[in-house]
Image 1: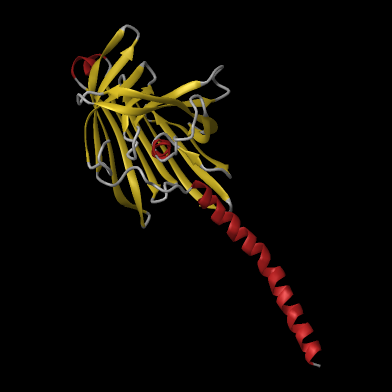
Image 2: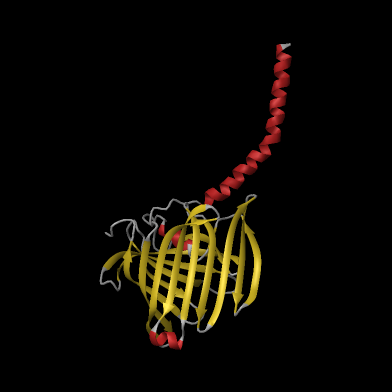
Amino acid sequence: MNSYKELIKNKIMVQKLIFVFPFLIFAFFVQNIFAQCEKENIAFQSGEKITYDLYFKYGVINAKAGIGTLNTTTTNLNGKTVYKTQLQANSTGITDKMFPVNDTLTGYVDMKLVPLLFTKGASEGGEYSSERQSFSYENGKIAIRTIRYRKGKLSFDEIITTDKCTYDYVSVLNYARNLDYSEMQPGENTHIQFVSGKKIVDMYLRYLGTTKVKTNDGKTYDAIELSLMILDKVFADQKEAMKVTLTDDLNRMPLIIDTGLKFGTMRCVLNDYSGIRYPIN
């Protein structure tokens, strides 16, 4: 009798496990979507502020163009404490009269550097555009709603989905600051999925090696050189979206940032900093 009761009890337990198992697998898969995007932040902290001198290059023009700032703070987004990183570039003087540039790129990531939201407002040469990319993590997928307006008119509003972690222009910089470059060889690539407009494209963060860089604060830093390359069918070859030089220490502080604009290139060169996490070596 007891063995019969135990058999029935075991059968019921097996049936319950069979019923629950798909939900456990689903929960694990959803959790894994978050886990693959999580990365411990060991480089920066809230309160970091870096100031840059801007240089604009277009054809034969290569002149000091304005000021830039890179600020990181913590804020509240949808009830969560997150990092807010904002990169601003504002032209001044004669460059502002010839080709005004006022760009603001803002990225929000959670405390494990998972991308949540990216916004961009860009006024370049009198033409204004804005973008917004919002990331949601549900049902084992990442859904990214990407919206762009140009000259006040909607260019697109689409949702793209993926099962791999995907970055924007700001969150990829935070990600790059927390990679371990100690074992990398020059020319070695790290693959990253990246949102370009309304598409997901392949980006490669290319480690170029170490060097010494003198910046506008009069100091010379040991530095890491990186190039962010976008692979897109639109381009016959790799398109260099951004080139970044970081301090070769725990801060991984951006020293020089080269970014392609619609017309020419904008270069940010370190002028001053405060609120960094560690003393500079």
